[in-house]
Length: 246
Image 1 (cartoon, rainbow, N blue to C red):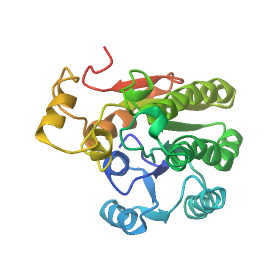
Image 2: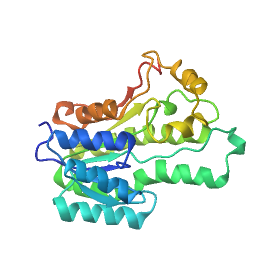
Image 3: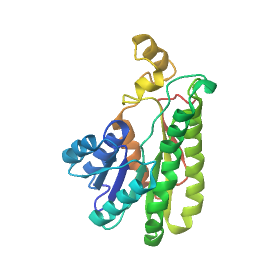
């Protein structure tokens, strides 16, 4: 029970990596807010783990503030924050991605980190403790072609993680990131453009361990970085990628 007595918010937790992280945190004793733009999906995961469901649009300040207020009302404090919500644009040459898609990717993948920090970091600073985990991507380290602006958003998140870590360290707040490789989540088809055996084989050929990442892989890694076992670790972007970035 490595998170016994801890409270956590996991965004994008209605499915995929976020759901895996929420389940793992709950199994280790944390009280978890399952936050997602899909309210029904959030409620399903929350019911499964005995958590609290919250509908949120992470790219909108009012929605993020409502999420933070609901968490504080229910829990009294937030010990752990996982910025997992994310989207991508479909594979395309950089100049062919629409302005609407570009804005949407940066709003969800980058602006959300700012908005949620604005809402929750003051409380963590006041408590002199806290763990923030940003779910970045191998795309921010070893970009794939035709996902240019998604790659850039994840590179932004890695730099933001390091900047947040150095600023918040004096307040006892740790900030780390995970860089997963493509996984069996709702975003997989969007990364690939089309889900065919041929495209899957091409993706898998770039992963030395020969498989996609899973929500369970992410849950285990997130548990470590957000637990007291990682109390001396801040500012890292840990690859959970089967060797993809080697």
